[in-house]
Length: 256
Image (tube, rainbow, N blue to C red; front, side):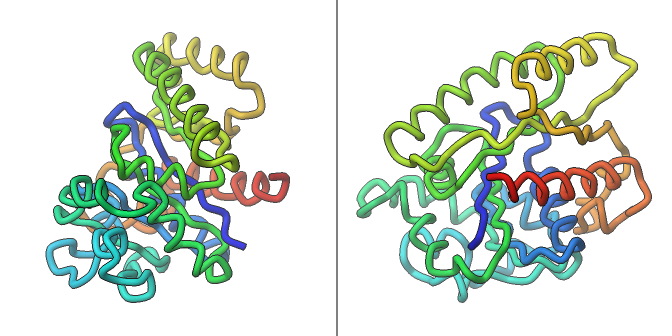
């Protein structure tokens, strides 16, 4: 049975796509059958996986509006080795088209259900807004992974996201829960970041992952080469952190 996780945060620029791509690659390296679903019209997770979004014949857009099955739309990441359900600008139009379709918020869930036995992990990269696309991701998922920076405004956004997850849980997806918070772009030299990190641990307890991803140049460089950071420079601190995070996820799934 596939475990489906949304990587979500309503705040932009917090490392959702970086987390999704590197976790997918690290899970694949650990022997897990992994699918990465790119639900962001910008297609950054697609490009970061080494897939050219401009040359796609089928994409997640075609899946959501019923023009293609998952088996037709998915591709293999040439650099990461995992499967990718890619996205490009076509997906921006799906917002409007989904409004008139049956079970509009459960289109992704229904498509993934047919391939439940094919994967161990399905990771969904959500756009930084509560849109119909994000709602499709939340309705399909068993849990949410929240990457966040240890800064004041990140705490403000976190409370909004937690409320959103509670509403989706109550009305659309009773399986949905917060799996954990991942601290990213962390700089231990900044006192405020240490304080916010401590606050998260006090408030959320074991929901905060032990792995901490530091601010890392090699992780930032990797997408320009169409590679996950854990492939681009496996020895870098950022890559090592994501591999530790993947190991932690594999263990955490056993207790769900």
